[in-house]
Amino acid sequence: MAEAEEPKKLESESPSDPPPAPITAPAEKEKPLVEAPKDPVSHKDKSEIPPPPPPESKAELDESKALATVVDKPSEPIAEEKSKEGSVNRDAVLAKVATEKRLSLIRAWEESEKSRAQNKAQKKLSAIGSWENTRKAIVEAELKKIEEKLEKQKAEYVEQMKNKIALIHKAAEEKRAVVEAKRGEDLLKAEEAAAKYRATGKTPKKFLGCFSS
View 1 (tube, one colour):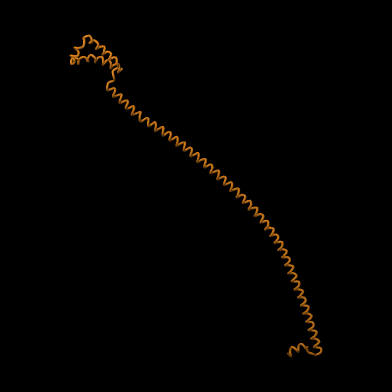
View 2 (cartoon, one colour):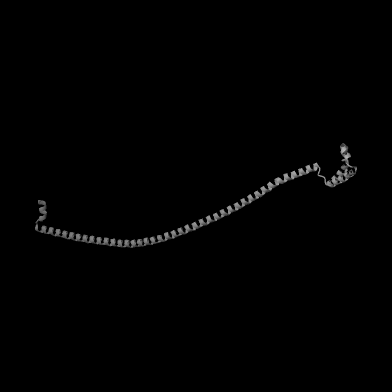
């Protein structure tokens, strides 16, 4: 609509173009009079050609373009920054996932190795315990046999000692009996000799010899 109104304004303004002609009066006198009617045709042709936009519309377009460029220019870096941030965030997430996966694998391997070491040590400890129990049982059995043997030997030795004590006591009793018998004989001889000396009135020689000395 603005473009349609602008040609009308130009057509209405076209008759005002001839007034400055009197200033160039000599040039018009040289022109033939027949060419004067061509001026309206030329004005019509000029009016048919779309006139350039007025300076105010150009300024507005320039301002709108400037605003558009100002609006568009920051959007491109923002989009690029967003794409960069998105790629960085994606890389960070992927790196974090890879790190967590690696750490989980390491943790699983560590637990497996620890459990394997625990099982290995437990097997060795159980083997050592069974070996210890077996050796202890063998030694205790041997000790029991030795104790039984010693008890048997002790009983035998005790019996032997008792027999020896009995034999010693028997020998002592026999010796005591011999001494008692000898004493009885000596007493009897002394009584008989004393009776004989009393009957004869003699004194024993052994007794005199003891006193004479």
